[in-house]
Amino acid sequence: EDQVTQSPEALRLQEGESSSLNCSYTVSGLRGLFWYRQDPGKGPEFLFTLYSAGEEKEKERLKATLTKKESFLHITAPKPEDSATYLCAVQGLSGGSNYKLTFGKGTLLTVNP
Amino acid sequence: DAGVTQSPTHLIKTRGQQVTLRCSPKSGHDTVSWYQQALGQGPQFIFQYYEEEERQRGNFPDRFSGHQFPNYSSELNVNALLLGDSALYLCASSLTGGAPFFGPGTRLTVL
Image (tube, rainbow over all chains, first blue to last red):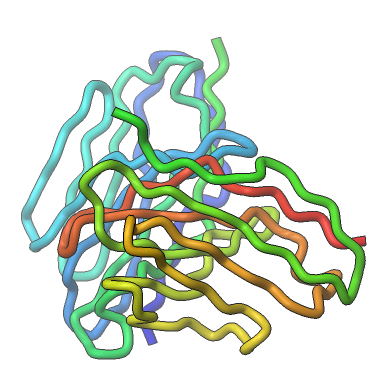
């Protein structure tokens, strides 16, 4: 069964203070690893898909990286508007999980001005 | 270009009732998945529809059923509602093999 563990559960940063969020996963063959941002009471907003170890993707202040066991979401010089819950999800290759996403519980990021 | 839309936004039901939630996928997408998100948790996969057939199902009881229409829109039906069914219900659409895009969700409260 696919599993995703995100850490920390909550992270509080000062504006401009860079940090990283961790997503550890176990899956029998990785089809893709996804990062989403979710604001309170709203649906997740797609950020990145990573497919293979060593891959990196960037968008504004966010950079996602992938190894065979974990992914990191690096936040450079964050602003208060980056405050949200960041969700990580995996999609496996095996027949029982090749269409669904398995999510972690998320990391609640708060950026103080 | 409209993204994924869901209706209604909020819904209040009592135990034992039945509910129908609706979803219109992003333009060009042919696959619809439904997820349940409890407070403080990540979304849990309910099922996925493609070509009007249920293609994969998560660990949810038969009280949860769905349908996909020829225009790719979808419905989620939940029968015999329980207090534990209170959650945010998310619809996600994708093009086969692509990343899922989520709608704003329907907040269901069961009293």
